[in-house]
Image (cartoon, rainbow, N blue to C red):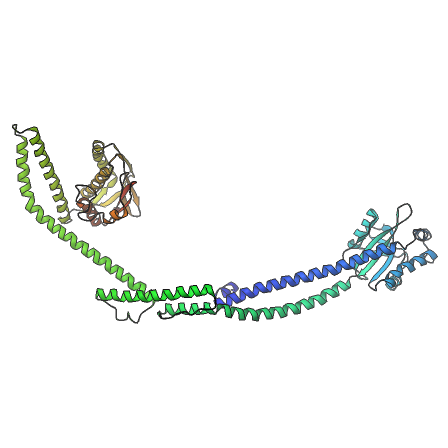
Length: 542
């Protein structure tokens, strides 16, 4: 719920919130670091002071007197009274928060220590000479360390029944180097707690003041900095509602000045776009009544899509009219020219049977017959365009059909040039179309591929299924085509062959379109061409 609330905040409030949180985190981190640093500094100072006093005053303790007290074990022993006076001077000569005492170097029942010499303050706590003290681990561990290593040690802050302390220990050695007592100096660590409370209150007050100050500074700064951004947002809202006359005036920040200039250029271009769109509608003769009042970008996109769709329809109508004109021309030309050509071919074939003709004359006659045959093939292509689609749709196995075409074209490929023909046919690919027309398409495209392999190469025929279509793929490694040549492919009277008319591919395109399919072509100059013929798959009736 909180995350959704933040996501729904306005842009200005989001930046203000995140900036404030980052600043608050930095301030709190700094305050926390200061608090712990100062607390540790005070603790270190107390520890160093206690260790220094314990080391200094241990020198004043006579080992002989300590030895006498340990042997006599008498609370009224003059040597003990002298030691009590010496340890009492620790507090009197230094500070009220320090107090010293002597401990015997033995531990009884694992955690009980024996007081040897005590100060007046210790007596006020109810402690007596040769009394026992139940020590905790924070006290015992440094005490054991001083007995073992014979060096000055100290405890961490600990709490017992008498208060909160930091204790420093220093060994008292006899003349043989044996530890006969331990000088302990307690530093009242409650001052650390008091300091923590005092500095904590100060830091809390400072944190609150800084937080309030930072909030208002950030708010003022964000309003100043984001003023151009608000202007840009207002401009975008105006443009989205159709007002292209809005212009931004940003002068405070150089980077946003560039953005403002680009925005103004955009609105100018949108104005030009709508003017051109209006002119286009006028040319089409169908300007909407509400177009002048409508300047929303999404409406403009919708209108442009309508224009594009209308343009496509007009192109299709023009193409259909062109095909109709070509068909009518083809029918007229075929009927008027075919019969005379048949007569001419007949007489030329008779000349071939004459024995008195020379070899050169026979060659000329054969060449004329070949050219007449080529002319008849062109007429047949025209008739294919003019002929209405009266063929019955049937179930065609394009795998089997392509295999038969491959056998047919293989001989032609070997006879023409050093060309290898390979097939990769997926079984049981049945499409809905006319077998004769599909065969004509495959032969025409394969023949074009072989003719494109001017220096030999490889022609590959593939058959597969893809997204509801049976796909016949014809790939050659020939000369390829440029993008400009691809653009004109399949149009009338355009061919890349010296004696071609372009009618063959045009017929292929028309046949495949009649079967509700399509032809895709990919080609690269010098690398080869791939034709993909898509024909809808046969769907069994249920």
